[in-house]
Length: 301
Image (cartoon, rainbow, N blue to C red; front, side, top):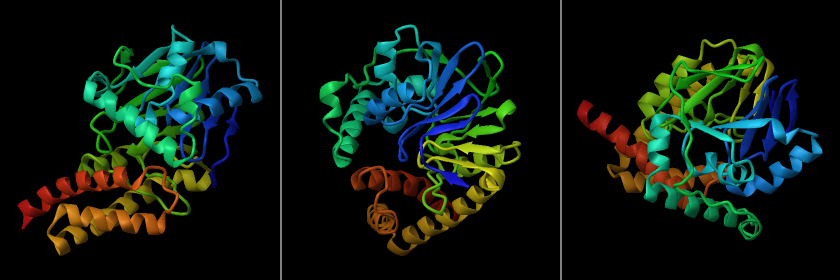
């Protein structure tokens, strides 16, 4: 079953933000932690939800960034300024990217672009949401465990969607947070965002598929529970095979990465007209994926 409405998932676990941009709150006995950080324009919704759901914001001690893309770090600047002692966690590669001036510029530009597309650009007039290079934090890596008291969060390095991608798993809750390192539960399908290295993306789906999972908390379009959650990673593996085949066919037929990327973007928006990012951003993503696949195909042919 797929659920896209923010609210309480179960004891110690909340879904906050919006359908297209999800963050999660884990409530441990010792402290609480946001898992992932969404798009910047969801900040007013998150602040409102914390109040409406009677969540004690003073217990929030950490934000775990699962990767450094603009649509997964958006609430960090606001909450870090609101709670200066808040600890920000990311992979070593994530922090490397987040210290790059060009990356910071891209985060801020893309955040505003998507907010404008969603008619939410006015949020930047009310809230200080821009990422700045001065934001720093702690590094977590494969096998690390974050202790929230009676909840332990296990970290997996899962590059492929991005070079800095992490996934997180909470054994006590049988809950997986794959971020975009797992399939995205859009509509009744699963989208495969193997942006930076599709082969690594597929390898990491295999890495996660044997975990004991009853809830999959995606960063886009809500969470999956029950029987569907138990089979979600296996279905994500099959979806990735199909998506790779479609992209390879487009490249073979056109022989041109740019043309194939444009065709695939047009196809996506016909199928998924309310997809969260703008067409120019998605076309760039397809170019990135196609460059990887083209290198593999050209070597093979």
